[in-house]
Length: 389
Ligand code: CAA
Image (tube, rainbow, N blue to C red; front, side):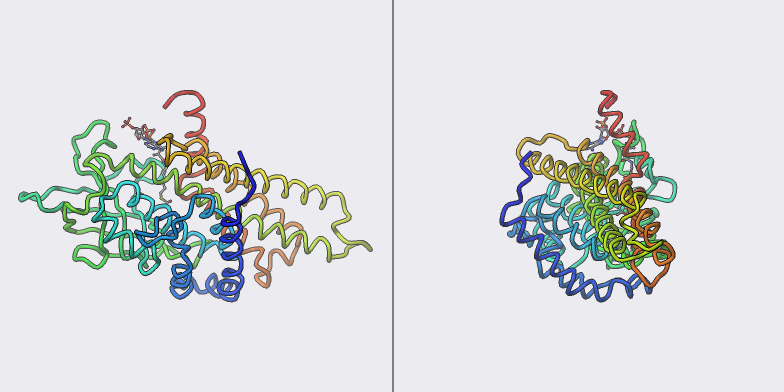
């Protein structure tokens, strides 16, 4: 694995770092406090090319590679993880799905405006009864008698960017008789301005509070057949392969959060004095700093490895599920652990809302939950290693 960054990679990383410092840092605490969706900065992120980094320019994106995506997402998340997840969902869960499985017309109509950041995209898999057990979908999609559209009914929950999205890639059962059930799932592109689409309650969340998350309800929503993504019955595989990409994004988000907490902890340990010396001179603090640094750098290697595996898969078609799950598992648990240690090093100040450390801690938690819990990642990794799938 060649870890040297090219000039192009360094350029996008520096661009994202500068953008995050200039545009996001001044509003991050306010967004967290109010939970307001940051439409204005997201629009500016689109203008910089951050909302469709891997999408070719002909479809409105920046035409760069997975490593470029990861580097930019890490920098944005380091300043604000809520902006990070909005970017990740748009790039990985929406754009990547349409880029990989959409036909030319779908790419022109539904990818271009979202990859360029003019509109926001989302992904709807989860339902009230099916989080980890994603194949247990009850939302139905019934082909109309004239075959022109699917009539969709059901409820989706925990939809990140749901309140802001214009288009959503949504999964529903189009063949309730299929065995196993996941082979009856199909994917659809939903226009949220059409009749039959309703937004439900917005979730009051512990962290990433500015990234709006809501329930959605479909009541006799008519989706034209031209907006089915991929073949009938191919939906579950689309959902899973899109999550392979998405999990690399969440890993990069977690890395950004961990780095922010780590840098704050190092600065504090250099300044703060106790018992007549800097606290960084105490071995118990040094042990924490050393372990934080090692886990962060190990996360980075797993994430960059997953990014390279995804890039390679564009040529070979080889699945990178293992690399992606390992990166997501390790980076998210690192983010949770590092932010916990960062609070401990800061003592009372770490617990105060005057500093962003407690925000990093709250934001880190969700990375162990969404896009597959740590338990699911361990299951995926172990099944692949044991040859059970
Ligand atoms: N790529 C392509 N196909 C895949 C795949 C992948 N990564 N993983 C599985 N498949 C295929 C299998 O080959 C199998 O195909 P066949 O029908 O040909 O046999 C089929 O999918 C079913 O696979 P499994 O038998 O492994 O399915 P399972 O029911 O045991 O579940 C699971 C697998 C890994 C547990 C899956 O349900 C899962 O990932 N659950 C977690 C769900 C999740 O991550 N949700 C996130 C919601 S989105 C979100 O969180 C976004 C956000 O807010 C930011």
